[in-house]
Every structure is written in C-alpha cells, then in structure tokens.
Length: 447
Image (tube, rainbow, N blue to C red):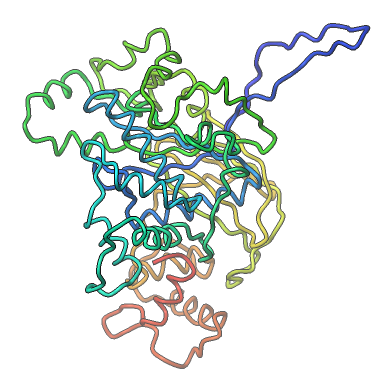
C-alpha cells in the first residue's frame, strides 16, 4: 500500500551566479509495505514455520506491483522481557527472513548453532523442514553444518514461492535498501527494533492483572500483533548513506536505537488508563525514525492486515482473462492514496488494514471494498454460490438453497470451464457441490 505523500517545509532555492548549486534530497517515503506476523514463527523463536510461504508469496506480489523497489526489514518484539534480549530476538527474526529471501544458508546456520535465550533451533525444527519438503518420516536428520545446508536451502526454496507457483530469490545488492554496502551485518536492509515500537500497549489495569497472573496465555495472545517483521519498500532511486543510517546492526545493542527516541518516549512506552493502539492514539512507537517511515503504511498500525488480489473482467466466465492496463486509484480514507494500472492479467493487489475504509476508483466509478466477507469452503453449497457470485455468474448474496439462478449459474460456469453440462452430477444428493465443481471453484478463488 503506497504511503501518502505530504508536503514539507518550503525548500529555499536562492538565485546563484556561479557554479554553486542547491541540493534537494529525495525523501525516504515507502511505496508499499509487507508484514509477517508472529503466527508464522515458533513462539519466542526465529524459526519460520512452513505456512509463512503465504506471506512470502504476497511479498513477491507486492514487489511485482512495485518494480525495482528496495526492501528493508524491521523485526519487532512485544513489551515482555528486557529491551536487550528483545533487540536480539527481533533482529534474529529479521535476519531469518532476509536469509530465506537471499538463500543465505550460513545465516541460518548461525541462528541454529548460536542459540540465544529461548530462541533455539534443534531437531524439532529440522524435522518440520523435512516433513514440509515431503521427505519420508524415517529420513535421518542432518547432524552437522555440512548436512544442514542442503536442507536449509531446499526449505528456503519452499518458503519463497510466488502466487504463480514459481520460486524466487532476492539479490542483497540490488533488492535491499542497503544495496549490499554492509555485507557483514546488512544494515539498511535488516534491522531489529526490540520492543520499542509496539502496535498496542495494554491499559494499566491489564498490565497489573497480567503481572499478578501466573498464566501468561492471554497476555501472550493479546501481544501477538507486536511480534512481527515489517518490510518497507522504497523507490529504486533512493540512495542511503550507511555511515548515517540511524538503525544499528540487527544483533547489536539498543544504544543507537535510543538516540532516535521521541523526547516523550518514556511516556509512550508506559501503560495508560485505556489500552492504546498505533492506529487510534498514534503514540505507541518510541523511535522517531520508525514512526516516520511506518506510521503512514497499513503495516504500521495495529489492525489485522489482509492482502487480496482483485481481477477486472469484462464478462462472466472470462476466468484468467482480465482487462490489462486500466488506470485506477486506491484510497485508504484519511491515510493514503495509490494510483496504478491493472496488471497483464487484469489484477490489482490490495492491502487492507482492519479498521480502515478502502475505496477503488476505476472506469469513473467508485467502489467501497470490504475484505471482511467470510467465504465458506468451496465444498459447501454456500461457498460454491458465493464464488459463483464473485465470478459474476449469479447475483449475491448466496441463499444456501438450490435455486433456478444457481442452476443457470452452474450450467454457464461448466460451459465456460469446458466441462460437459450433462456429465457428472454437480450437486450431490445431500446438496453439496461435486468434487469436480469444488476443485474448479477453489482454483479460481481459493479453497
């Protein structure tokens, strides 16, 4: 999601008579953002779970919508524990993501062989990788760095697969904000921000109750949005001076972070009478630098982020035949605006944040987009009907009943898919879609 451009103070441009010149530096403003939430990691761990492949696919989709954009990763922890420990954990998570993207198995080996606190990779993580790769359960686990490297590499390839099913890898010198200028710590491209920028802070009463309870389950669940890796994408033309880059190395201490704190950082980090979130109160980030970069993006707030792809089609049944190169404008009301054109397949990648309103202007019409509609499984009657409605074959909402409109939609969809309308039964005796119909609909709009 593009960040809103804001006008700053006037730039003084004096008349010059010699060889002097006035310099205007391009502002560091994100074009788009991406976020990997805590559920994609092991708890208190930098190990990336297999289902994180969904997030990596979405990152690749965002990159395709912003060709040449430079990525910078910011690991974040929750306000439980001490700052120094959380700084290292957040940095290890960001490094883990970076390593997967650039296929640096040696970085994963360092995470494996040099545990910190509860962040310990071992046989359970190796078994998870092996299972995800489809290897037989009896396959021996690697016992040393030389044996682990091929497993790490294969698993990284499994994670980094685009929505098109093709694997991808990034170049640390071309695809990250630091452009490989710091090959040892990857500054500019990888940061660990400790617990300094939470998207939510508990109230005083909640904090007291959590401190008095021996069961941390609810506290850890509520804190989950704070544990994340945020990726900000910047224009390809941006050049940064790593000597002046304010963020320390991912695994360094917190001293350099604190130099960038707001003057009221102590107040920002303390609980107040009511629970506060970045999207509502706007005062939960302690670091001025991160606040300036991330607060205008959907990934900077506390709401749940949903990514979807909208396809522009001319007629029902034109599956995979979208209208390409159509100009559009996306408005996140009160936040940001992005202009663009539909892709070669007629699609638009859209990022929603919970609690915001998104409007799409296209072909002279404004649409209010709502990502909150739950879609039942394609194997249910409701799910089949809703998918046919979204594909333009029948009016919505679904009724959950076999109606003439549903019958007509089924026949037309079957014909467009090249299936025999008089062939296998499409609705079973128990009013469920047939296996073939569910398979086709799931392929079009997800399971």
